[in-house]
Image 1 (cartoon, helix red, strand yellow):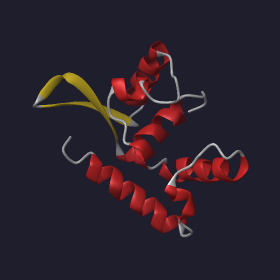
Image 2: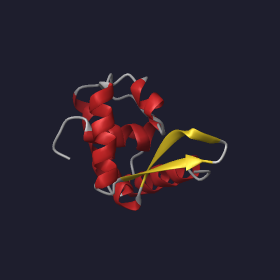
Image 3: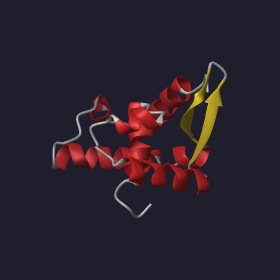
Length: 118
């Protein structure tokens, strides 16, 4: 978790619903492909994400957060709030919700619904 890209990848998955290498690569974060590949492998090895294939597209790997990965949602959300209030580089409707416990549950429920087909 100590490098600069690991939490960024998890944030993209949790808040932006990115699931494929291509989606991560095309994001505004501009992660180099070699670094992205390394982080995805590391996150999978450490149990934060899992790689799956879906029946209608066996060529593409899909990455989804595990329960361990989802347990980082409070950290990701706190960083989003901090960023929004201190450096104004995070513009997401989540920062308008006042009850953070409710927000954690909303975000996890949305994430699970967006990845349910996987």
